[in-house]
Amino acid sequence: GAVVSQHPSWVICKSGTSVKIECRSLDFQATTMFWYRQFPKQSLMLMATSNEGSKATYEQGVEKDKFLINHASLTLSTLTVTSAHPEDSSFYICSAPDRRKTDTQYFGPGTRLTVL
Amino acid sequence: GQQLNQSPQSMFIQEGEDVSMNCTSSSIFNTWLWYKQDPGEGPVLLIALYKAGELTSNGRLTAQFGTTRKDSFLNISASIPSDVGIYFCAGLDPGTASKLTFGTGTRLQVTL
Image (cartoon, rainbow over the protein chains, first blue to last red):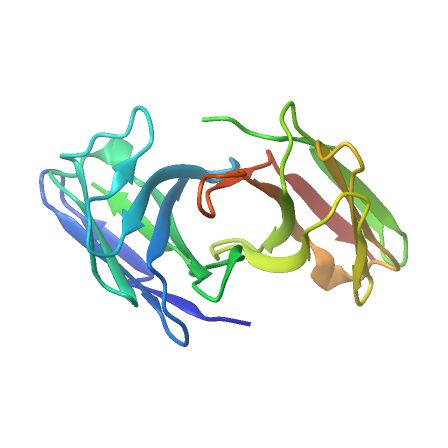
């Protein structure tokens, strides 16, 4: 199956700093990527849709200025958590549908963010 | 956001037993996907269903797309220890360009 990677796999930062997470599709192109967050023992909740060449679309209740998304190319989307606080600690996962078959999505391995 | 309801929420079974879980929604979907997530990792796609009534197998896994398009079922036959994990169903919203709605998850524990 298609491969999606994320970097870093985990990060620990101090409160108030910003953290950037990368999501790459390794063997296919994706005009759209999705960012999810997952709290312990809970399901995945969609945060935003990243669109190549245009602005991201955010789900209700997700702060645009706090979670900056940039879809720089057909294989890369980045999520920047600005001025991170302990409540932002979570597991962040991206996904990408293969442009050739948009009804099937592939997920990255996730990034564990811990804000001290 | 909206979530799909999965049942059971968790289950403990013995190795070799068969497992059944289901997923229900208040709205219809055109595509149902089943994922497995291991601790600390992203979900891995198990089976994709594209048509109402469709029955699809992947090894010991069999999934069905409900005829009403509001539910789906996953069966695992002859469970083994590596089946342990959380299973999520996901529905693809029609007309929303690949946007998925996830189920609440079923946590599976397998004992020897």
